Image (cartoon, rainbow, N blue to C red; front, side, top):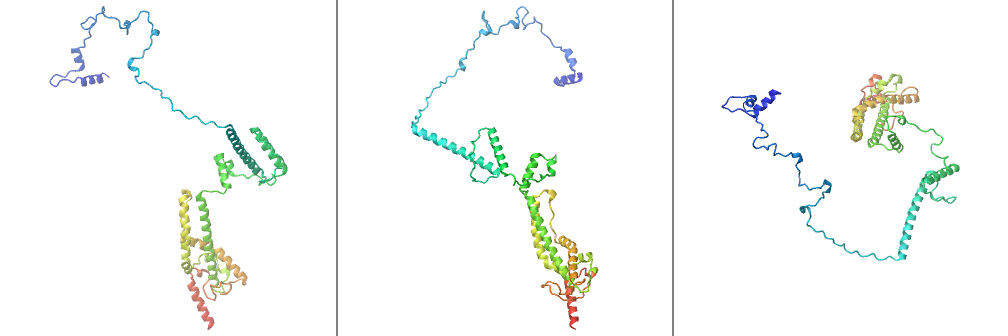
Length: 379
């Protein structure tokens, strides 16, 4: 601390360039500060000086106390503006209303209030009748009770109506009577607020759903329809191809792997236009669905190759079932060519291979073998 104070003093009183460098202590010792004495010139002596504590601030008045002082507004604080009073403009007196006119106005006001009260009463009565299941416009069996004016009166009236409806048996046709109350798992979920649960239940009962859920239902229906049409088309095609192969093909010679491995490039090329159009519509729905759905439930686009592979894999059992029905109807083996086939496909025998040889066999090969067999028979 001493060094810091000394540095501050040295910086404050810098030495001259030509003189010797002196510290603050040396300067203070060389020229110590002088304190003037009370009797020094320029200072009042002790005999002439008056104590400042007893010197009055204002000229004193004998017998005057502070509470005797009154405040007087100075002259410069008084406004010289004179405020005038402007009388208001006289308003025309309203014309006197005749007594009969007053009576008519009062009567109209009373009728209006009575009609308003009657409409309110009729609305309340209609609401209560609707809740109790009474028919609209039915003639009352007895005179209506006067309208209650208190909450207790309304409660008594409601209880009377409910008891009367119960005696008449109007509660016997209530929906859900005698059945257990339907409970859900969310009702006992401690992490779902009661008001949120009630709101979700109301929305669910009304059949409402977010927009992306509605589009999801439409997308699932379109995908199921497309896959079902694709599956039925290929199942009929495969059964025709296997039926037209040769009449000696037995069911034990065909396995599920053989049927699922069957491909027909000509059928794929012929149906490609329909597949592309249907997949384009499905992908448009997927694009619309992904724009509204949350990120976690978005769906990929549909590809023709993946859908065809799925179709070949899922149609194996249906193809075997169709072949079994045809074989059962013709004595345990596949019928000859042209028996049980569709008119647009035609018929004829051929010598196409069976079993593993069916893999990769196209319709062109089948037609070539069929023509060869027909030529051999004609010879």
